[in-house]
Length: 193
Image: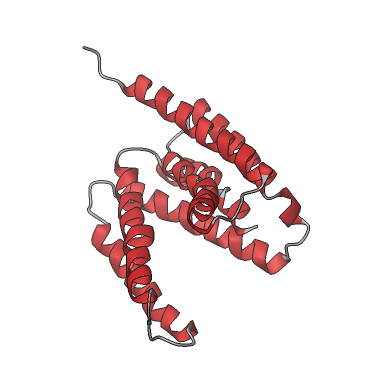
């Protein structure tokens, strides 16, 4: 359910950008937001019934945080906010230390955890921090939805856990929608020769 709530981030970004930055989200982006949100709901439809109110609320808070973060970065696009994003991640790390049972890494964890921290957290969040300089906050959060489908694909490829038919169909819809949206955006902003 958290991923469903996170799927609301592009929509929330569009609304917040309109209110605070006076940026109008174009029609193709609203269409892409709607299609991808519906695809995420389709993927996780059966888990809705099993979810609880607190989990859904926390997922919504997460989506709102992503939306607000993208809009704040967009509003300060002339300022390099990568150092502040890295400080934020460091703060989250320090807070997370209070929730771990055993801080000692052993065996494969010595390689896997630092690798994941760099590949899955540091690099993507630096790119997410840079992206609003060039595209709108709703468009940044549309790309964030790729996690919804790429996560299960990575699990399938590495751990051999088969994704559901809904995940495959919804994922194809999400990837196709974002690809079409990106191609249309590139064509719109292509400089004349």
